[in-house]
Length: 477
Image (cartoon, rainbow, N blue to C red):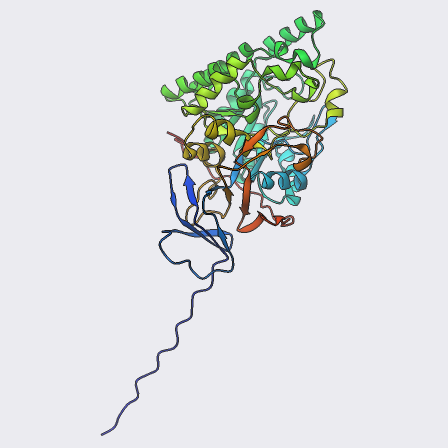
């Protein structure tokens, strides 16, 4: 009789440790929230697991007990280092992206606005090159000013390079303004490429008349900014663009809406089946035209201007009930000196406010802490909806397979906004001294911990140029 020796079983290989686990916190997505553990490997979320399960093997753990864990912010409206007229913004992609990360934003979307005589497709290529030094991921909006025989082909080419959103201005005549025929053609052509137009909607003829009236009255200085760009101009342009979008059955997104009337026009169109969307900005929810009566009215000059307190309250009410889809910073980094040089005439001075770093705390304070907005809805406006409305698959959600972009914040924490503590390339903050909640304690971008209790850890120029996917017909219901 012979005996045989059973074959030996090779020892099992232990699973490779995860790069990072974030545990103990309340994981918040737009669709719901629960205590959970987020597991990260190779820049991606590989699991969001029951907190009762033991932590998997890992290289680093972050205890988020008592805090919210939310998706990294997607800022759909940034102007980075652009030259407009005689003024150049003071930041570049390195400084702006570092400030964004400090503020919990892990993806920024900038604008490729063509210089005079420059083709839109060439402006995109130029911006892509400038973005190579970014510390966070970036995407781009194209911009069309005048329709010509080449524009449709350029829109198709931009789409193949991952740019499926295009900015249109209905104001700033002879600079970037697109006429009604151009708006119509872009809406229709871009929709065929799975894209959506982003519209700055103010009726230029109303604005020019209001500005001429202000000049005649000796009231064109920064302190009189609201009278030079009235609320009526916004509502008129929104109504016209909505009619065009409805006519060609194309989606449309309105940037920086400031009034309840404008938001209501969009919502009414949505009820008729128009795929129309509203963005607003932190400054339109938090500040009002009273700032123009202060010592530095030029610091608050932006277009559209800050509105009357009652208008701000009405806009905030619309946001709280879910009628506003996204929060964009409309970040523009100028100094007090630049804005002061021509503060006697708002027609020629640079406009815009710095805000990529403060978008999270300002809106979290105003909407969640003071307004009682469910944090899930806030996450939708801050991250999820901007990702969807830019075709950025993998962003704005904490779920397996998505990018490991996340923010840990203590909802009970408070600290004042002070320019000395901020990181934007300017010498002022519109919120100086304001006590704000929602400051990030930990920021993870692409799986890298870039902010923690030890401070900021510069990852270097690792930001990716994101390519937008075609967007479905029904982006948000």
